[in-house]
Length: 284
Image 1 (spheres, rainbow, N blue to C red):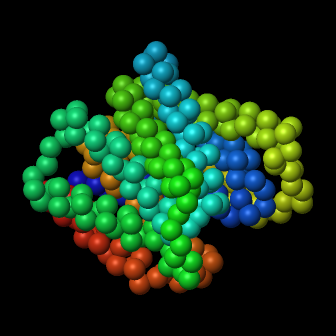
Image 2 (image 1 turned 60 degrees about the horizontal axis):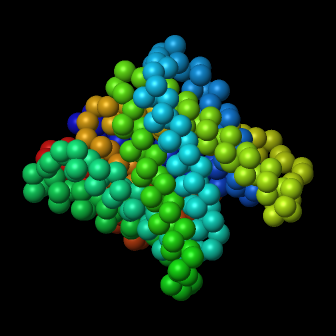
């Protein structure tokens, strides 16, 4: 039951972070937002080390570095895929892949469920698609490039989850700290290179709202990493990764609260299905 609660919390908080990241990205390039929010989140993680600890053993360091590399790759692919669109198709594709990849690893490592558990997991994956779907007039099929980028984003996010789960149980926050540090560093280098080549133009006049959104994105994203670490250490990688894929749920909740955006009927069905399937998974 604890794994279900922590997994669901991971999804919500990841979604909250995406919401604030999207708000900040309206002012400057997304790669800058990801880089700066990662640095902010890193400071937050350092503040948490007295509580959770941070063992600097080679295995934890190695998995943390790999998680950071995959995170930078995943975020780059994610933003690029959503820029190409259509978001209503590519966003759920990335989310589902991000669940399937670590679930396959979990199964290979010995995760087994009753038939009821597998039904619950299948329902959650369906809910991921419904929650992430954004209805609109644009129903065009994605291009091959957009689809490949969405698959890359899902693969990258799934790989991050696998790396965090593989870190030693007694490593504390070391893998998450290195994830944030390496990801911020790589995205920073990418941004500087894009700036030199003229692919990204620096923005000016950012408001206080931007800085609040940036701070929120960094703190929440790091918090979600901590929640995932706790959830994966408490239970099955398959269960936690499938629940984590529900992260669009957190985004649409905040969009409803702060931006007064309407939640589409198909998304409401997805939310209800996710809640019912999570309860079923807890019982199974």
